[in-house]
Image (tube, rainbow, N blue to C red; front, side):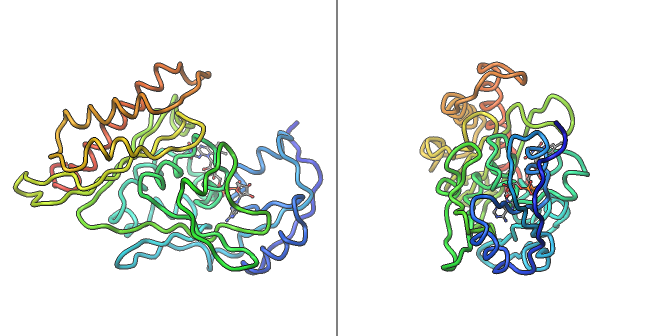
Length: 297
Ligand SMILES: Cc1cc2nc3c(=O)[nH]c(=O)nc-3n(C[C@H](O)[C@H](O)[C@H](O)COP(=O)(O)OP(=O)(O)OC[C@H]3O[C@@H](n4cnc5c(N)ncnc54)[C@H](O)[C@@H]3O)c2cc1C
Protein backbone atom coordinates (compact mmCIF):
# COMPACT_ATOMS: atom_id res chain seq x y z
CA UNK A 1 0.00 0.00 0.00
CA UNK A 2 1.72 3.23 -1.13
CA UNK A 3 -0.97 5.73 -0.10
CA UNK A 4 -1.24 7.03 3.47
CA UNK A 5 -4.53 6.89 5.34
CA UNK A 6 -6.40 10.24 5.25
CA UNK A 7 -5.07 12.92 7.62
CA UNK A 8 -5.64 16.60 8.41
CA UNK A 9 -2.79 18.97 7.63
CA UNK A 10 -1.77 22.22 9.32
CA UNK A 11 1.20 24.55 8.83
CA UNK A 12 2.70 25.90 12.03
CA UNK A 13 3.51 29.61 12.00
CA UNK A 14 5.78 29.57 15.05
CA UNK A 15 7.34 27.11 17.48
CA UNK A 16 4.71 28.07 20.07
CA UNK A 17 1.93 27.48 17.50
CA UNK A 18 3.35 24.01 16.69
CA UNK A 19 3.57 23.09 20.39
CA UNK A 20 0.03 24.40 20.98
CA UNK A 21 -1.29 22.25 18.12
CA UNK A 22 0.52 19.16 19.46
CA UNK A 23 -0.93 19.85 22.89
CA UNK A 24 -4.47 20.23 21.55
CA UNK A 25 -4.35 17.29 19.10
CA UNK A 26 -2.49 14.89 21.40
CA UNK A 27 -1.37 11.43 20.30
CA UNK A 28 -3.15 11.63 16.97
CA UNK A 29 -0.74 14.31 15.68
CA UNK A 30 2.89 14.33 14.51
CA UNK A 31 5.24 17.04 13.33
CA UNK A 32 6.46 16.72 9.78
CA UNK A 33 9.87 18.21 8.90
CA UNK A 34 11.54 16.80 5.76
CA UNK A 35 9.00 13.98 5.70
CA UNK A 36 11.58 11.48 4.43
CA UNK A 37 11.09 9.09 7.33
CA UNK A 38 7.54 9.88 8.42
CA UNK A 39 5.81 9.81 5.03
CA UNK A 40 7.27 6.48 3.84
CA UNK A 41 6.11 4.95 7.14
CA UNK A 42 2.63 6.40 6.65
CA UNK A 43 2.50 5.23 3.03
CA UNK A 44 3.40 1.73 4.15
CA UNK A 45 0.77 2.06 6.92
CA UNK A 46 3.44 1.34 9.51
CA UNK A 47 2.32 4.60 11.15
CA UNK A 48 -1.05 6.34 11.01
CA UNK A 49 -1.76 9.85 12.32
CA UNK A 50 -4.92 11.90 12.02
CA UNK A 51 -3.05 15.22 11.91
CA UNK A 52 0.29 16.34 10.51
CA UNK A 53 1.73 19.65 11.71
CA UNK A 54 4.13 20.95 9.07
CA UNK A 55 7.04 22.93 10.58
CA UNK A 56 8.79 23.85 7.32
CA UNK A 57 7.73 27.51 7.57
CA UNK A 58 9.86 27.76 10.73
CA UNK A 59 13.10 27.40 8.79
CA UNK A 60 14.13 31.04 9.48
CA UNK A 61 13.85 30.35 13.20
CA UNK A 62 15.13 26.77 13.31
CA UNK A 63 17.30 26.33 10.22
CA UNK A 64 20.75 27.69 10.97
CA UNK A 65 24.23 26.73 12.17
CA UNK A 66 25.64 29.21 14.69
CA UNK A 67 29.26 28.93 15.81
CA UNK A 68 29.91 30.54 19.20
CA UNK A 69 33.24 30.65 21.10
CA UNK A 70 32.47 27.56 23.19
CA UNK A 71 29.76 25.70 21.28
CA UNK A 72 27.96 25.22 17.98
CA UNK A 73 24.16 25.50 17.85
CA UNK A 74 22.29 23.76 15.04
CA UNK A 75 18.59 24.46 14.56
CA UNK A 76 16.42 21.35 14.37
CA UNK A 77 15.15 22.24 10.89
CA UNK A 78 18.64 22.53 9.37
CA UNK A 79 18.65 20.29 6.33
CA UNK A 80 21.28 17.65 5.47
CA UNK A 81 22.38 19.76 2.48
CA UNK A 82 22.90 22.82 4.68
CA UNK A 83 25.00 20.79 7.12
CA UNK A 84 27.08 19.47 4.24
CA UNK A 85 27.59 22.94 2.78
CA UNK A 86 28.37 24.79 6.02
CA UNK A 87 32.07 25.67 5.91
CA UNK A 88 31.94 26.83 9.53
CA UNK A 89 30.51 23.49 10.66
CA UNK A 90 33.07 21.51 8.64
CA UNK A 91 35.88 23.60 10.14
CA UNK A 92 34.64 22.91 13.68
CA UNK A 93 33.49 19.31 13.19
CA UNK A 94 34.61 17.66 9.93
CA UNK A 95 32.72 14.55 11.01
CA UNK A 96 29.49 16.21 9.75
CA UNK A 97 30.74 16.57 6.17
CA UNK A 98 32.16 13.01 6.26
CA UNK A 99 28.74 11.69 7.30
CA UNK A 100 26.55 13.91 5.14
CA UNK A 101 28.41 12.88 1.97
CA UNK A 102 27.19 9.31 2.53
CA UNK A 103 23.65 9.95 3.81
CA UNK A 104 21.08 8.97 1.21
CA UNK A 105 21.08 11.03 -2.01
CA UNK A 106 20.62 14.73 -2.95
CA UNK A 107 16.81 14.41 -3.04
CA UNK A 108 16.70 13.24 0.58
CA UNK A 109 19.47 15.62 1.68
CA UNK A 110 17.62 18.63 0.21
CA UNK A 111 14.65 18.09 2.56
CA UNK A 112 15.66 15.82 5.45
CA UNK A 113 16.60 17.61 8.68
CA UNK A 114 18.85 16.98 11.65
CA UNK A 115 15.80 17.24 13.93
CA UNK A 116 13.88 14.63 11.97
CA UNK A 117 16.91 12.35 11.90
CA UNK A 118 17.43 12.48 15.66
CA UNK A 119 13.70 12.26 16.47
CA UNK A 120 13.22 9.29 14.16
CA UNK A 121 15.76 7.46 16.39
CA UNK A 122 16.40 4.80 13.78
CA UNK A 123 19.37 2.76 15.07
CA UNK A 124 21.01 3.15 11.64
CA UNK A 125 20.66 6.96 11.54
CA UNK A 126 24.10 8.43 10.78
CA UNK A 127 23.57 11.79 12.52
CA UNK A 128 22.72 10.05 15.79
CA UNK A 129 26.18 8.45 15.74
CA UNK A 130 27.76 11.81 14.84
CA UNK A 131 25.99 13.60 17.69
CA UNK A 132 26.89 10.80 20.12
CA UNK A 133 30.58 11.06 19.15
CA UNK A 134 30.54 14.83 19.62
CA UNK A 135 28.76 14.75 22.99
CA UNK A 136 25.86 16.83 21.62
CA UNK A 137 22.83 17.79 23.65
CA UNK A 138 19.23 18.10 22.44
CA UNK A 139 17.10 21.09 23.42
CA UNK A 140 13.39 20.28 23.73
CA UNK A 141 10.79 23.02 24.00
CA UNK A 142 7.33 22.44 25.47
CA UNK A 143 4.53 24.38 27.16
CA UNK A 144 6.67 24.88 30.29
CA UNK A 145 9.86 26.05 28.57
CA UNK A 146 13.03 24.23 27.52
CA UNK A 147 15.05 21.29 28.78
CA UNK A 148 18.44 20.09 27.53
CA UNK A 149 19.21 16.36 27.32
CA UNK A 150 22.33 14.36 26.46
CA UNK A 151 22.05 11.99 23.51
CA UNK A 152 21.86 9.08 25.95
CA UNK A 153 18.95 10.72 27.76
CA UNK A 154 17.26 11.71 24.50
CA UNK A 155 17.41 8.33 22.74
CA UNK A 156 15.44 5.87 24.83
CA UNK A 157 15.57 3.00 22.36
CA UNK A 158 14.83 2.17 18.73
CA UNK A 159 12.36 4.74 17.34
CA UNK A 160 11.79 6.10 20.84
CA UNK A 161 12.93 9.43 22.26
CA UNK A 162 12.35 11.46 25.41
CA UNK A 163 10.40 14.06 23.36
CA UNK A 164 7.00 14.41 25.04
CA UNK A 165 3.65 14.62 23.19
CA UNK A 166 3.54 18.44 23.37
CA UNK A 167 7.26 19.01 22.93
CA UNK A 168 9.55 19.55 19.98
CA UNK A 169 13.27 19.41 19.38
CA UNK A 170 14.39 22.95 18.61
CA UNK A 171 18.17 22.82 18.72
CA UNK A 172 21.22 20.57 18.89
CA UNK A 173 24.16 21.97 20.88
CA UNK A 174 27.72 20.75 20.55
CA UNK A 175 30.50 21.85 22.90
CA UNK A 176 33.63 23.26 21.21
CA UNK A 177 36.75 22.01 22.97
CA UNK A 178 40.33 22.96 22.03
CA UNK A 179 42.81 20.64 20.24
CA UNK A 180 40.11 18.32 18.93
CA UNK A 181 38.92 16.89 15.65
CA UNK A 182 36.61 14.18 14.37
CA UNK A 183 35.90 11.78 11.51
CA UNK A 184 33.17 9.44 10.24
CA UNK A 185 33.23 6.31 8.10
CA UNK A 186 30.46 4.06 6.86
CA UNK A 187 30.18 0.82 4.93
CA UNK A 188 27.08 0.60 2.75
CA UNK A 189 26.04 -1.98 0.17
CA UNK A 190 25.65 0.67 -2.52
CA UNK A 191 25.91 4.47 -2.74
CA UNK A 192 23.14 6.22 -0.79
CA UNK A 193 22.08 3.14 1.17
CA UNK A 194 21.69 2.87 4.92
CA UNK A 195 24.79 1.69 6.77
CA UNK A 196 25.79 -1.93 7.18
CA UNK A 197 27.80 -0.37 10.01
CA UNK A 198 29.35 3.01 10.64
CA UNK A 199 31.50 4.73 13.23
CA UNK A 200 32.23 8.30 14.21
CA UNK A 201 35.10 9.36 16.44
CA UNK A 202 35.96 12.62 18.18
CA UNK A 203 39.39 13.03 19.77
CA UNK A 204 40.97 15.77 21.88
CA UNK A 205 44.73 15.94 22.50
CA UNK A 206 46.79 17.70 25.14
CA UNK A 207 50.46 18.60 24.93
CA UNK A 208 52.48 19.79 21.91
CA UNK A 209 50.98 17.99 18.90
CA UNK A 210 53.70 19.33 16.52
CA UNK A 211 56.53 17.66 18.42
CA UNK A 212 54.72 14.33 18.51
CA UNK A 213 54.54 14.41 22.33
CA UNK A 214 50.79 14.93 22.66
CA UNK A 215 48.61 12.49 24.54
CA UNK A 216 44.92 11.74 24.19
CA UNK A 217 42.93 13.92 26.60
CA UNK A 218 39.55 12.50 25.67
CA UNK A 219 37.82 10.46 23.00
CA UNK A 220 34.22 9.58 22.13
CA UNK A 221 32.95 7.02 19.64
CA UNK A 222 29.44 6.76 18.19
CA UNK A 223 28.28 3.73 16.23
CA UNK A 224 25.29 3.27 13.92
CA UNK A 225 23.47 0.16 12.68
CA UNK A 226 25.16 -2.16 15.18
CA UNK A 227 22.89 -1.88 18.20
CA UNK A 228 19.42 -0.95 19.33
CA UNK A 229 20.46 2.70 19.46
CA UNK A 230 23.75 4.58 19.10
CA UNK A 231 25.85 3.98 22.18
CA UNK A 232 28.74 6.08 23.36
CA UNK A 233 31.74 3.95 24.27
CA UNK A 234 33.17 5.16 27.62
CA UNK A 235 35.38 2.04 27.74
CA UNK A 236 37.30 3.35 24.73
CA UNK A 237 37.89 6.67 26.50
CA UNK A 238 39.11 4.84 29.62
CA UNK A 239 41.57 2.78 27.56
CA UNK A 240 42.94 5.69 25.53
CA UNK A 241 43.09 8.66 27.92
CA UNK A 242 46.62 9.79 28.77
CA UNK A 243 48.20 7.60 26.03
CA UNK A 244 50.16 8.93 23.05
CA UNK A 245 48.18 8.26 19.85
CA UNK A 246 49.37 5.16 17.98
CA UNK A 247 48.09 2.53 15.57
CA UNK A 248 48.30 -0.05 18.35
CA UNK A 249 45.99 2.08 20.49
CA UNK A 250 43.45 2.47 17.66
CA UNK A 251 43.44 -1.31 17.20
CA UNK A 252 42.74 -1.73 20.91
CA UNK A 253 39.87 0.78 20.67
CA UNK A 254 38.49 -1.08 17.62
CA UNK A 255 38.49 -4.33 19.57
CA UNK A 256 36.50 -2.67 22.36
CA UNK A 257 33.98 -1.30 19.84
CA UNK A 258 33.62 -4.71 18.15
CA UNK A 259 32.87 -6.51 21.38
CA UNK A 260 30.69 -3.74 22.90
CA UNK A 261 28.25 -3.34 20.01
CA UNK A 262 25.11 -5.45 19.62
CA UNK A 263 24.41 -5.96 15.92
CA UNK A 264 21.63 -8.14 14.54
CA UNK A 265 22.00 -10.32 11.47
CA UNK A 266 19.91 -9.15 8.51
CA UNK A 267 20.09 -8.83 4.73
CA UNK A 268 22.99 -6.37 5.16
CA UNK A 269 25.29 -8.83 6.91
CA UNK A 270 25.99 -11.30 9.68
CA UNK A 271 26.67 -10.40 13.31
CA UNK A 272 30.36 -11.29 12.87
CA UNK A 273 30.74 -9.11 9.77
CA UNK A 274 29.09 -6.12 11.47
CA UNK A 275 31.26 -6.53 14.55
CA UNK A 276 34.31 -6.62 12.31
CA UNK A 277 33.17 -3.41 10.58
CA UNK A 278 32.47 -1.64 13.88
CA UNK A 279 36.03 -2.42 15.00
CA UNK A 280 37.69 -1.52 11.74
CA UNK A 281 35.74 1.72 11.24
CA UNK A 282 36.42 2.78 14.83
CA UNK A 283 40.14 2.21 14.24
CA UNK A 284 40.11 4.20 10.98
CA UNK A 285 38.08 7.15 12.27
CA UNK A 286 40.22 7.50 15.39
CA UNK A 287 43.36 7.61 13.27
CA UNK A 288 41.80 10.10 10.83
CA UNK A 289 40.59 12.38 13.65
CA UNK A 290 44.07 12.45 15.22
CA UNK A 291 45.71 13.10 11.82
CA UNK A 292 43.38 16.06 11.39
CA UNK A 293 44.62 17.56 14.67
CA UNK A 294 48.30 16.91 14.07
CA UNK A 295 48.14 17.95 10.41
CA UNK A 296 49.42 14.61 9.16
CA UNK A 297 46.45 14.03 6.84
C1 LIG B 1 15.70 6.74 0.40
C2 LIG B 1 16.18 7.20 1.76
C3 LIG B 1 17.48 6.91 2.15
C4 LIG B 1 17.93 7.33 3.39
N1 LIG B 1 19.23 7.04 3.75
C5 LIG B 1 19.69 7.45 4.93
C6 LIG B 1 21.03 7.18 5.32
O1 LIG B 1 21.83 6.60 4.59
N2 LIG B 1 21.43 7.60 6.55
C7 LIG B 1 20.59 8.29 7.39
O2 LIG B 1 21.01 8.64 8.49
N3 LIG B 1 19.33 8.59 7.03
C8 LIG B 1 18.86 8.19 5.83
N4 LIG B 1 17.57 8.49 5.47
C9 LIG B 1 16.69 9.24 6.42
C10 LIG B 1 16.86 10.71 6.18
O3 LIG B 1 18.05 11.14 6.80
C11 LIG B 1 15.68 11.51 6.79
O4 LIG B 1 15.77 12.79 6.34
C12 LIG B 1 15.63 11.57 8.28
O5 LIG B 1 15.59 10.31 8.85
C13 LIG B 1 14.38 12.22 8.83
O6 LIG B 1 14.43 13.57 8.68
P1 LIG B 1 13.14 14.34 8.20
O7 LIG B 1 13.40 15.78 8.41
O8 LIG B 1 12.77 13.89 6.84
O9 LIG B 1 12.07 13.85 9.30
P2 LIG B 1 10.51 13.53 9.17
O10 LIG B 1 10.30 12.34 8.31
O11 LIG B 1 9.75 14.75 8.84
O12 LIG B 1 10.20 13.16 10.71
C14 LIG B 1 10.73 12.01 11.30
C15 LIG B 1 10.18 11.90 12.72
O13 LIG B 1 10.70 12.94 13.54
C16 LIG B 1 9.66 13.76 14.07
N5 LIG B 1 10.18 15.13 14.04
C17 LIG B 1 10.71 15.78 12.99
N6 LIG B 1 11.20 16.97 13.38
C18 LIG B 1 10.94 17.09 14.71
C19 LIG B 1 11.22 18.09 15.69
N7 LIG B 1 11.86 19.21 15.39
N8 LIG B 1 10.83 17.85 16.97
C20 LIG B 1 10.17 16.69 17.31
N9 LIG B 1 9.89 15.71 16.41
C21 LIG B 1 10.28 15.90 15.13
C22 LIG B 1 8.46 13.53 13.17
O14 LIG B 1 7.24 13.75 13.86
C23 LIG B 1 8.65 12.06 12.82
O15 LIG B 1 8.18 11.26 13.87
C24 LIG B 1 17.08 8.07 4.26
C25 LIG B 1 15.76 8.36 3.86
C26 LIG B 1 15.31 7.93 2.63
C27 LIG B 1 13.91 8.28 2.21
